[in-house]
Image (cartoon, rainbow, N blue to C red; front, side, top):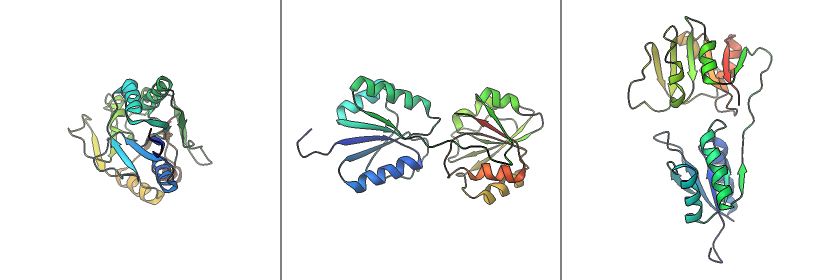
Length: 227
């Protein structure tokens, strides 16, 4: 590293916390900041600093990037359920000897009025649904296939971007958009589609908590995938 060069920090991002951290570090001005986004959405909100979009090619690819770019510190601020990139970060930083920090948002905790059933896997979540349920699936596209065999349920699925191909569900409604932090908006959506059950992950954070509050206020059962 040249004597006058700033240390370079790689933020594994895609969350509100990662964007806030990038803004904080860029404003501080004593490090160069690169934020890596997976590229799952077509028009992501870009944080300040340099932005890299796309995968690294596993732990080996991430280690190579760390070496090539002269990364001095890695901060894993990915989604709490982004297990693969977090595991790759552990292996890549161990291989390169670069410090790794984790920025993990706290999970949600059930409060009075919540009707949660915590499950340990998506398979368990799919099994927990009663026949005839109208289910709001608050999950990413890569987690939907587990529910395909539940042809006795109707699914309402929200996605940020339209899928490249039609979803293979026999009975479903697709909604495009992001979660609302306003419980009233989420409650209106649930009522409009006759939702009887909510399936989601314990992602934590305020941005997607509106659906949890809406389910509580409406008395809806929530099947929630634990950390």
